[in-house]
Image (cartoon, rainbow, N blue to C red; front, top):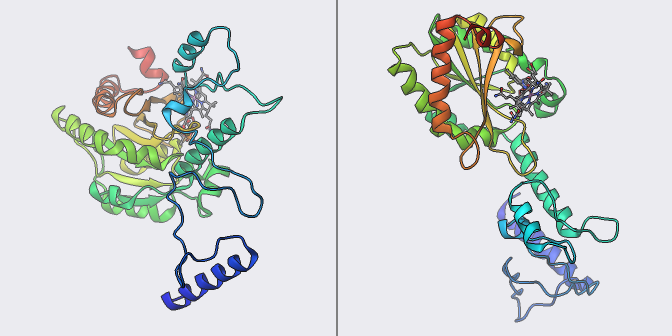
Length: 308
Ligand code: B12
């Protein structure tokens, strides 16, 4: 559709809305009154007379406002609410949630959905020269969610690309996977990736050719280990988002991962995010230390715990 057709369509819709009285007639000949700015409270609907504007429930101040009527200890309730992200002190409307609680829940859920269904920004992957390979998922995120088993296996093209492009038998292989949150990768990679690169080099270890795995699950480390034969694989991957928290990333690691390895053979540094989680810069340094330990003890997961 070109601009002329689009404008004609818009005008037609506006004419129909005028005809039904759903919007006010133009203030001056030929000019339609502009919509009010979003921050300004809108007048009641001309159709129903209802006023549907509510304050934004997602602001920090709104989240921390108690809605319990006549609490016995108002100050205590505020302190309790400030101490947790759990949804407490929200009050109720009869037996139900208040509308603002419901809207907040839906808003937070939308953050989760966005993080889950969105792809990692290609520009970010380009910044770190990460080429992309894919697991055996062919049906998009929906299949990714339903078939974790396929997210643990590289497809044939991925195996070919990795074989062609990656240095083999390296000390450390760094891999990035989207996992369950694109937002987590976007929020932390810029900080964590260079720290790992630098840390591995400073430790005198060789670092393999890094790449990105789309539709990745943690278990894909086994296929990567079988192809590249590194001492240690570090997989940076988006964690399952919580309600309203989508930027948490994990570093899953394994010593010489191979077909048949399980989570008992792996270690994880989790909850990597700024302001409240494991800081990505510190996490970068920490995973390099773990990689060194894995090499020293030639083990990871439960075996590494027993070796220490
Ligand atoms: C989902 C989940 C699980 C699920 C995994 C099932 C599944 N298929 O998704 C279940 C309920 C089975 C589980 C169990 C455990 N989990 Co868990 N889990 C999580 C959670 C909530 C999300 C993980 C995620 O997003 N992974 C990313 C996606 C893309 O990975 P995935 O391939 O879909 O799933 C794999 C990983 O989730 C992995 N995994 C899950 N938990 C753990 C724990 C360890 C130590 C390892 C190595 C791997 C691992 O198992 C899945 C299958 O391979 C995190 C919380 C967090 N903030 O990360 C805790 C978390 C990772 N789990 C944790 C723990 C301790 C465990 C258990 C050891 C608990 C126990 N005592 O039994 C077991 C170990 C399970 C195992 N796989 O060996 C801790 C790890 C702490 C740490 N640094 O060591 C976390 C961080 C929770 C916490 N804050 O305490 N877990």
